[in-house]
Image (cartoon, rainbow, N blue to C red; front, side, top):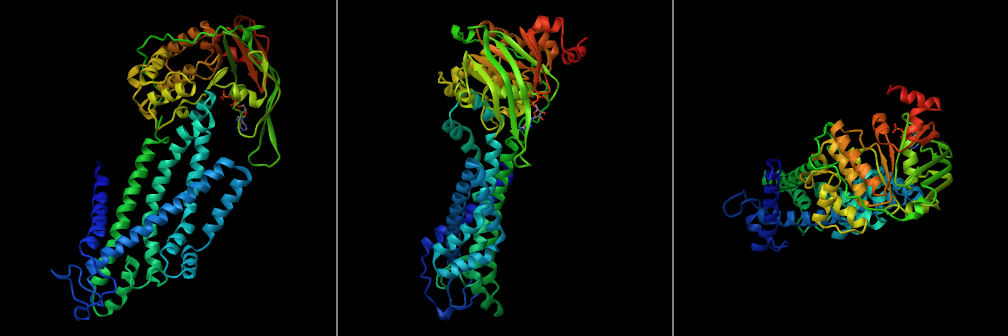
Length: 550
Ligand SMILES: Nc1ncnc2c1ncn2[C@@H]1O[C@H](COP(=O)(O)OP(=O)(O)OP(=O)(O)O)[C@@H](O)[C@H]1O
């Protein structure tokens, strides 16, 4: 165990043992008073002295700590459940539900918490559950915000898109990616709330609106200390206050360390390495899944697109939208390598995402998209993901789940594709895509940018869909590794898979493309057999792109 966690853990362990064991070994009736032994200083008989009613402060502090911990745990648990529930609901439903939930969060935050808690507790005076309720109802908002924002970020993460693009169902994505991403945040939020809840309970009892005076909690003990202090009985304040500070500090330190560790191993650190790659050691020969269904090659086209327009609503100006694809006509030849090139921002990635049924949130398309000879609407495009199409997103930095090993992600992909998914199957699928088996046990942050990019491609290939839509698969690779990817794509195509690849690498396009399309400003301005387009460019946009190669 790391040093920073050892001290708080040891102190918290001691405090909890004290709170549990002492009242059990030395039961003390909280109402029992001994007026012959009032305000005795700490001694061998009374380690923490006695109070104004002659009660043993050592035993009462243990009872008080136990009660405070119990109430704080319940309150933190309840407020975490409430916060997680509201956060999940807001992120899941979005729209009006999200807006109402967030206004509720703002309204709760605007109220003075202690005052609100005092009102609640005053309504049900002396009831322990009223204290729990008052703390939970004023502390859930932070958790709701954290969970909501984590979930919103996670839902649009590329590795979730990749899982969706591989045909994984909603429940699978929730249980495999979304909930595991939210759970550690909720756990840390719970621990972080503990010290806060202890202080809150103590404040309420200290103010005289918490537990009845005969019971014991740290707040009540501190309240008792007021009278004794005037008589010089410093121990009445020192020991309960010391407990309060010790327990608060150790739980806060533990939660802080856990949060920092999570951040270090999470997405922020993942892929922070440079994009240099190690050459693959395995031969780049794909175990491609043969596609022999003749349907999709009725007229030689795996995908046919006509008049495709894509409108994306503005997130800032209500009612406004921008037309980013402006009437695209396109065809991808079945069992061939179809390359799409174009300047940055031309619309290449959005074309791929639309074909995969994964346009940006709220976007709608017009025109006609036919996949494998069938014209499909948005729901149809989503339904054929994983069988007809699979999308490998461009940004390798976020295409992999940061908290799962390469092997685990491959097994998930195989499982979602309803294929054998043992560790040996995962290894075989990785090696079939020319990924060194030694990378299987690594987490994404332990991969170079290029290795991560190839793993993302391997996950897409493992789905075994007829059409592989792949965005910039070589942007982070050196020339050796580009060669491995090239061989992989060629072998997939020769086994019948249709490849539709977006790339800025014109050398690669020249070497590998059977069919080439040039996109400019949301339109396909030129397309056809690669040799024709490259040999005799007809559009100025193609000319200027190829000019860089000359
Ligand atoms: N979610 C979005 N909302 C609004 N506009 C978007 C969104 N995503 C992309 N765009 C815009 O659509 C246009 C096309 O984007 P796209 O990502 O398809 O470009 P690209 O050709 O793939 O560029 P690059 O080669 O730089 O990746 C750009 O002008 C971009 O700003």
